[in-house]
Amino acid sequence: MMNNNLGKYLAVGSLAIGGAFLSANAVQAAALVGEVSVGPLTNVTGITEIGGVSGFSGGAGVSLPYIGVEAPDPNTSILNPLTGFTFSPASSSPSGFGSATQISFVPTGSDFNPFLNAIGLIRDIDSTTATNFAQKAQGTPGFEGFSVPAFLQIFDQTSPGVHNDLLYSFDLESIALPQYSTPDGNQNTPSTVITLGFSGIFNNAADGSQSAGTFTSTLIFNNSSPNTIRDNIRNAAGGGLFISNWQANANAATVPEPSAVGGLMVFGLLGSVVALKKRKEKVLN
Image (cartoon, rainbow, N blue to C red; front, side, top):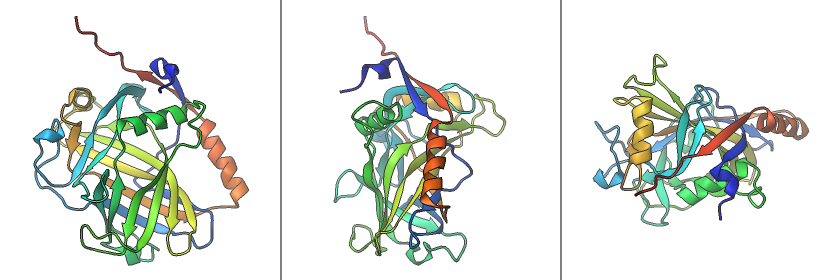
């Protein structure tokens, strides 16, 4: 059951989202190190936005179901609607996942290079899960350890529907606040980029070693302004606003001793506080 405080304000420790990469901090010597990009299994040409997945007949992308909670944009303080995430194409087995594939590697020496073109699964984040992450962020009792294990799984296969021999996985532990941007900073300019951060733990299936870091993902809307996208997300039917061109970028790197890392993590979580405000429900007369 949702904490009543969510209907007022949620105090959240803000996590920084920097650049277009995921920075994974190795906690064991054998942890994966290097850069990698993950994207849809297939791409759809000419489709960037559809107001509801019910109008979409196939292809790859992600829909954004509104969860009824809003947060100030870290850059502008304008309220942004918070959402879940439903990935397409959906996996036939197991359910509740979308298909994903790794699409690029920089530099060549990355530990992820052997996994080029390997296919995997990315777990959907429904409204309940997204709300639980908001509860965790405000320190609500009972949500301290909430996470989504195996949010991303990459296997040693390059054929859709084959899920044997896990290479690595990523456990999702927090979702940062979305940031909206345009080329000129005007909220009515018909070009929008939404930047998202997903923090958690990488698990190397080869030896069980782990790395901690944050996926950075960008959603690009070529023909709609930030104000239009906000309204479309709030009003979309059929499972949420759909976009075809999601991509998540990562950079896994080693760090100092665990004690120092722990101190940095605490500072990052407590360094700044923002307020989340639940959008008022409309009352029908």
